[in-house]
Image (cartoon, rainbow, N blue to C red; front, side, top):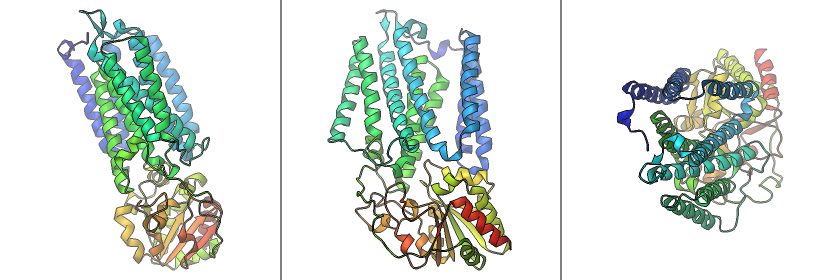
Length: 472
């Protein structure tokens, strides 16, 4: 049977409580770029206390634990050193999958060797009923997190098409599978046969796959946030199985914060939060030509033209997107901003909540380039400024500046709030070519507006050339 809290030494409960408080402070710190480093420190200290406490109170083979930590830590360090910022979204999805699989493996281990986990009911000699519920839910959420995160990883890394893959009657299938999983978890409380446990696991892997494949690429930031929430709830469920309060607290914090972030992002995109969970989010089809086949007149400019226009402007609003991340142009962009400020130009950065491939993607890149925090503004704080701005400098952003989201009810991004760059006196749009479209697969009317000048080149090279002209 589970060890009761009363039987747990007071210092252990206190240590876990301190860890929980540090985790809360970590989340608070991570809510702002200015305090993010301190938030990370709180999180690391809290996790160190929690891990050390767990190792002390359990009779475990310390060499095996240290070896496992060394191997896992070494792999993590190697990946962190080599990974590019452009690959961060798929890396996060990949790590979420590992959390989900860890929950599944813990559940399987507890099922196969319940005595070692202290979850045997002395009266029956079988796994306690409450432990079966915890185990079933933990394995189910973990399996969903794993398979869903694998699909997200494949989509974000380009190994699978970012377009929605829609199955016939997918909602009926998903609801049927979800109902079957819940029924089997309930039945597991009266019958702990292997077929019940492993059927729950298999069905959960399948539904995780089916929930994510219908989701379009433009909606992936919300998917990443939601999968983060799932991984937290999986960890919390396994915390109950292991009778580890620190794991319960940590998982609940991750799960709730991920769900709150997903809700905030859905609100910012005018999307349904329930649809995210149901796997129908972003599932609309995109037309075959993706809006790029029609020839329309547009104006092309040079780096020298852009430098002249911005140097003679009073205010410039810079809008970064995934193209900036791909070319690693953030440092050159910061230099451009500094040069403009020396000429007396007001410079601001406008961040859309889903710019890039994951929440906060642009904020991380700008922070890496040491862009002052007070120059970076979220959509709701800066959108009204475009009408008074002389220049909107868009670098690698497409969907988040597309006015079709406001006017075209057939567009897959309809209803998503966008940055009103077209209202600026001049729009300078950095893009590799006119042939490409955004991740949502739709063309952008801003390209063809009279006040827009297209700067077709690699984003980093274009900005570096602009900087040379500004430096003269």
